[in-house]
Structures are given as C-alpha cells and as structure tokens.
Length: 181
Image (cartoon, rainbow, N blue to C red; front, side, top):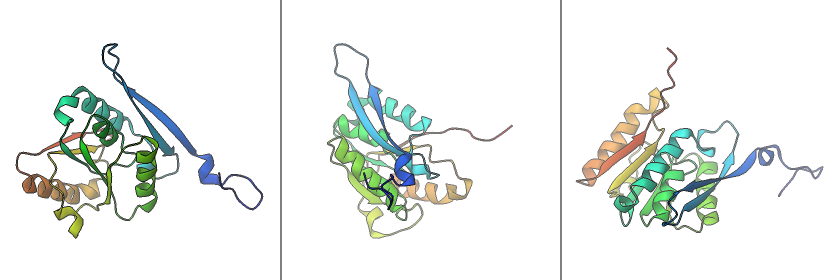
C-alpha cells in the first residue's frame, strides 16, 4: 500500500474495501462468488449500489439465458452484474464514462481479482465515437443508470442505438426511485 511522505496510507486508500458477493444457495449447484473493490469516495462508480446487487442476482437466476451471450453493461461502475454474467459464461464488455479513468481502472482490477476476462470500454452516453459502433450485444445491462435526469436523453439514445444495432437484443435494468414525496 502506498502512503504519503509520513508513511501513512493516502486518504483515499483508507476508504477502499473489498466486498464479497455470493450467488446461489442450492447445495446441488456450485455457488458463484464475486469480489469487488469499492472506494467510498464521492464517486458513483466506485461502490456497489443496491440495484447492482438486484441485477446481479437476476443474472444469476437467469444464468442459462446469459451463458454464451454477448453482454454489454452500461455505467458498470463496480461491475457486479457484468461480472456475474462473465462467471456464468457470457462474453462481457463493461463500460463506464470515458472520462472516469479511476472507475475504468477499478473495473480492470476487479476483473483481475476475480480471474475474469471482460472487455473494458470507456463509453460516454450520447457520444458517438468508434467504440460504440463495434458493440453488438444480445443483452444490455444497466444497474441504477437512471439516477441523473440530465443524463436520460443521452442514456436512451445510447440504448436505442445498441438495440437497433443488434436486432433481437434486450435492455435489462434495475431502478431505485430516489424522488422524495
């Protein structure tokens, strides 16, 4: 662990933890475990949100549907749903905002930690660079990607493009309503 000049750990390293997520409780079928490096800084993509756990459980429950499928996770952050999809045999591309280098680096570390090969791609919603044109997913995942009203148009434009680029594909999302009554 790197520290500062006094030998103390850097402040953001003190906020880093590794969480472990288990899927499957059937004694006849092996469980899947995923470790995720989280950082409790004020960065959306560096900790596991509850909707991510729900979507990851869905992937596990529908693992036969995901096995062998081409999957893109939008706004993946800590990537829990995409990592579960990779564990069950999907070909996974994990994406997050191209400008969030710390999040993209964390995605690489988490894949390495779990001994999984996933493509990592900086993909900013609504930005039409070459990377989006190469994606042809069968399944598009998005855990809690509807948190920012200002991003809706760009998110939906990106999802629409991916769905049209891959006829027969589906978008599966989980959503947490944060609106105060």
